[in-house]
Image 1 (spheres, rainbow, N blue to C red):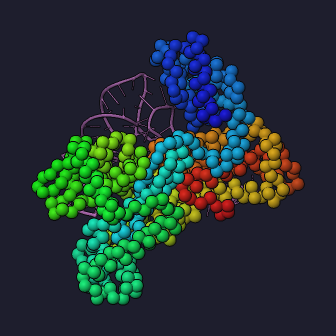
Image 2 (image 1 turned 60 degrees about the vertical axis):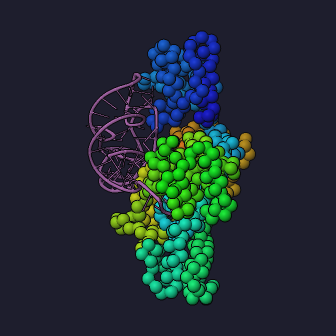
Image 3 (image 1 turned 90 degrees about the vertical axis):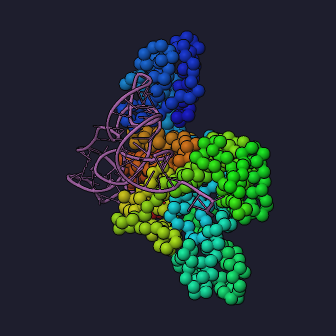
Length: 553
RNA sequence: GCGCCCGUAGCUCAGCGGAAGAGCAGCUGCCUUCUAAGCAGUCGGUCGCAGGUUCGAAUCCUGCCGGGCGCGCCA
């Protein structure tokens, strides 16, 4: 019996109690059943009696007593106790929990999937770093978290499109082009330009491909620098993200919005909604109608569009492609955008609460030898995706960035994450998987396999460590569903650490393989099922984070 | 000044309406048996402070205090 089934059982008992007049309450839609940390409190606990007490006009423990008797009579339930202020502590029959191992093996890689978000069409935009330099640490957090979130949302049944918005228009790109050309001509980089080795590299590549470049007239040379330079830069960004395990379904060019006249179309749409006005020669959107702290310029006095105007057009484009949820993942330095993005949705006549979601990720500080590594893109001394991967590897980088709530600032200690020790959480989890794989491998060499379904005896998995492990395995689907609903993939990582811990404890106490000439017992075979089930869940969870599940370490 | 995030064990952080947690650090133990990158035990907390809501608050509300990040006809 898993938590889902238990919830249904408890709710059914409440319904029955209401039907025969033992309780006079409205039956709640959701019944909370939790796995208590303290195992003295049974396999599961519910607070349902306390919830109903007020409405029933009776003491919580009295309501609990009424329900306890009925729940205890249900099949699969071994014991029910009323505890504390009115908790019901439930203990299940051993066999009813052990069944789960077979359920997990039958589901395989689909175990953990749900329909929690079925029917939702989600546009998930993340990274979207400007193609004026390599991917740096701020964007890497979103690469790891965004990709994991995409996987988690998909597992919860949503239709997800991962999208990278590519700012290939505007002043930053012009600065980038001027910097390239300056370097190619041996001139100093402009004051507001970009410096760094990558600029030199790209300039050299352009010069090789177009020998006439440096001697072209200024406008022509800049145009070439912009076209070819941005292309090279973007290829490098895509490649480094791909090597990091992150790929997008759509790479959206800002230029296309302009080329297709989508900014004009968006302006017209906003105007039709009555949200546009003119002041000081500029065209504005009255975002203050919807809580923004100031109105925003769409088109400047000189006739140029603002970046914000492109944002409006891009949002409209997403909506017209059928996405009912547009998720933006932004760094804390852009949190000022939340208000205006929400207001944009409202100005289009959409529901800002439903159609737009902005996730803000706090900063990442990189520590080396206990000291922060300073970051400055212009100066070129940045921590890059490639540097991180070189220092601690793809798995550690992804895991380190995905295991924390995006609300908290991360201090990423390179020495810790590079270490092959228990300080390093990613090894703790991966090591559990490798150990499991090892048991299964060794069993195979002994000619000892899972056998038929009938060879599995769930009732034999009655050891406390086995019960603990089964209880945690049962939580996986709800952990994934909750991570998806809350957009918090770090919950999956924390869960895996808990699961790995319970497996290590099981491993320490419960022998799976026969020793020496020992015969394979039913207990051992049933433990092999549990072993394989645990391996499947660890592998599924690591896969949601985009972290490998090694067979050996 | 205004807005967002954070403040939980010595350190790094989970938990975010229901019975205070993990890892590390410290101290004690466990490898002739499935990977010791592991396990067991122990030490350690007025959950920043003050009010409020609630049967019940680390969790929700208000106000403070401390730290981080933002508030352009920049991108």
